Amino acid sequence: MLVLTRKLGESIAIDDHIKIRVVQIKGKQVRLGIEAPKDTKIHREEVYVAIQEQNQQSASVPADKTRSVAKLLKP
Amino acid sequence: MIISTSRFGQVELKQEDVLTFPEGLLGFGDLRKFALLDDPNDEIFAWLQSCEAPQIAFPVLEPELFAPQYKATLTKSDMEALKLSAQEKARYFSIVTIPDDPTQMTANLKAPVVVNVEARTARQCVLQDNNLAIREPIFTKLQQRVVQNPAVAIKNQSSGIDVATKLNVVKEVGL
Image 1 (spheres, rainbow over the protein chains, first blue to last red):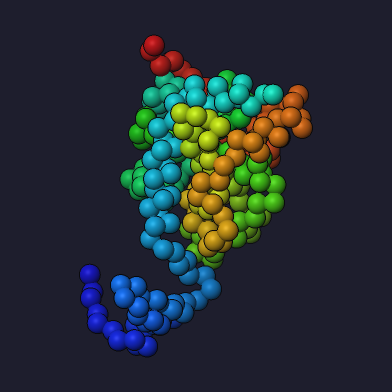
Image 2 (tube, chains in turn red, yellow):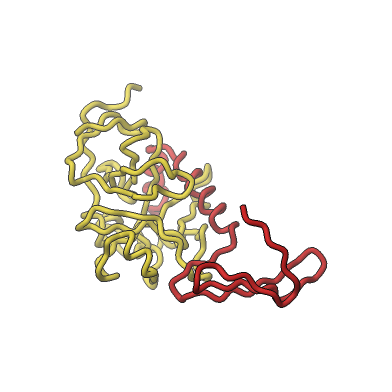
């Protein structure tokens, strides 16, 4: 992993089109501004972790569970 | 070809039933081959079954069944990975989680499984739209759907189930 030190207002350029700027430093929090082409996906890492967890839980559903849901849904 | 599944036993598939996930699914990056199975004993869900790991299968639903306004916007890189030329040609499936209490079940709208039916390629696309939930509660919404049209099995009310392969069990799971 590449580790860089930046001060408030300074930026990092990734490839030719992505720029990450330190916008604010407050206590233990850093606010980052990200400039990237419209097509670039930018997510907090928690999003990926939450999706992985959801996938893991989904994969443990037994077949008879989905069948029984049909009966439950009928009023 | 015949694949082993922990839920349905030995299942017979045609080569064209297999969907390739070039990057796997999130958390399951090693698994590249899946099939969408239509279980005749299940009126609601299809199953995204791994062809490589018998125990890995995800119940899936088309989002239109519980979110009629659902609109996914794919990025250019999603479209390229799926070899899609037009966004409208894609089919969407939400991965569903069913906890012990099924009324608490949820669907992932944020990261649908998107299928290019013609190329048999698929990908779990993480959408940029921040209003989409990873765990959208769907029980009451599905219930409303059942109430509105009780005569038709819910999965037959959607358009994409034709992507799924009718479950053809060669040998049942030993009980």
